[in-house]
Length: 300
View 1 (cartoon, rainbow, N blue to C red):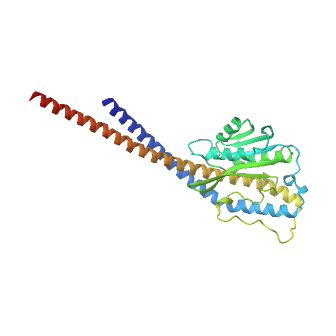
View 2: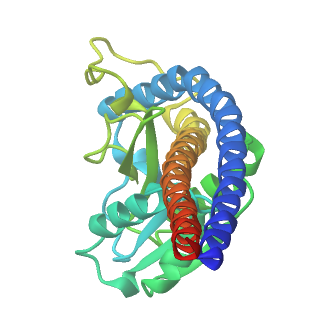
View 3: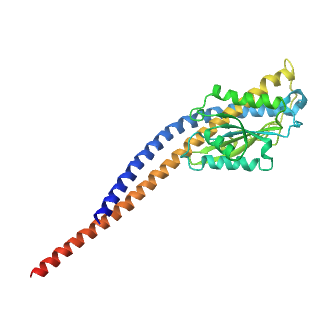
């Protein structure tokens, strides 16, 4: 009996220490989440306006004017930009994103899919799935900076322009609220694809924005080619950056909620263990009293 109560006390102490850790991690994630959400909300209007602008231009210009508008590549390959986290302990954040991405490319042969992984978890998932990993970026999802995202967008643009890929897919997690994040797969290139009017962050609004329908003609200065050469690559970089911001906010929110649930579960476990410990202790006291009473009765 003494051994059992001692083991329960050790277990209670261990769970209390774990609860302190999860509570601290919850507070850290909450602080990071507030900063990430602020960045997401400030950048969304610019990202949507940039997307609508290029969508409008794509409706009135010849797709042959720029390679990012062409849809007739014959490589047969797909580039997947997969955004996940570097660390776990974020509930289903990484698992849901990987499942969504794999579902989107399930009809494409694995040898025709190449992956740019942003986050260690996505790189590990690509390797396990037998996909070719052409680049891996780590250490940027915790506090994304635009200059850190530029190589990703530049790589996607350069390889698509060289016609090494038929399409570029962007897989990220859209931030809706602190308790709700939605995995999204967006066809980023070529422009004018089915995902043309689904701006990043769109699912966070109650009503999706309507497709931009230009009512007047456009005058390009100095020329349509020059305007597209300057505008389209910057849009790719902007959209990738916005997706990373969305994923970062979603990651911190998911981790905060997971740590809160872990702390609550630890509290319930402590209550249960304390109740069991009191039962053992009360049984031991009752047995000792019964033994004393029995000994006294035997002497009489």
